Length: 255
Image (cartoon, rainbow, N blue to C red; front, side, top):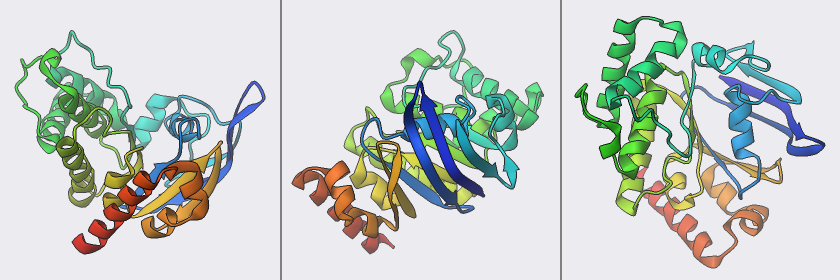
């Protein structure tokens, strides 16, 4: 579905992403991990059209994305959530999601946008009450709203940016299960950026690891978690390594 080759992004001579190549297969969940500043969000910003790449190619369903504006990329079928939710507080929950649906894949129809909003809210477990306000949502509710907005655009590929941030352990498990449900029931391909290794490893099919803008490892979760370079630059502590190992053990048992 997605083929990225030789992707580079420079800011005033500093290479935030340096010659990164990868592919994403249809209907898989790819985990994208790495320490802060490793280039994860920069890659998302290029894939979603916020930043133009300095060099390289990004082909989605065979068509080049580089140089397209964000709304054109959404129209092609790539939706994105953001790490920090910023809803329109003067709009209701329903209106926030319908607004996203209006611009998704060139719908430009209020009726179709509202239908998309109904489906998206039902999928994430938020009320479809058209009068409910945003201000009553907690951290988990705001994450669900962010996801519903992305789903309302009708994506073929979902870029999920740190969907677990600010959630407690139970909410993290629910959010991770939600991403798997979106893939399994809707057939949406997902790239998931996340720092919570223990939860991510239970869900993803493959993992790619970045460090200082470069890809240092890619493969099955068990292979990547055991890669000495990944342990050195990302896991860092025995506690983190134990958490990842335990998550992989649970993942094998579940499957």
